[in-house]
Image (cartoon, rainbow, N blue to C red):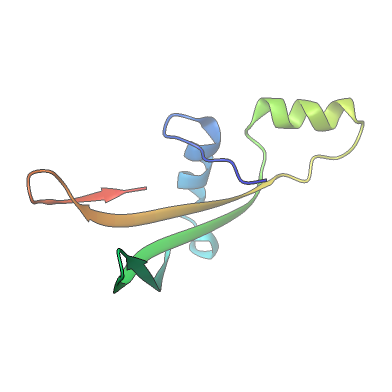
Length: 92
């Protein structure tokens, strides 16, 4: 299952902290995307996290099953976009 998380959520903060550790750091990624028939190369940075356990409801669900919590996987995507004023903003 894929679930979008937002700023302010504990798991988002955990992923941001992990992205500062070298083995979970952001790495550049390029891909080709097509918008209204026009192809363009798009660049983002990705940080993969594994074993995330800060989500209380997730931990509780595993505790109720009397099983060890395997943790969650997460992927942070960071990119630069043009804002409404013509400047550049960084989004995670």
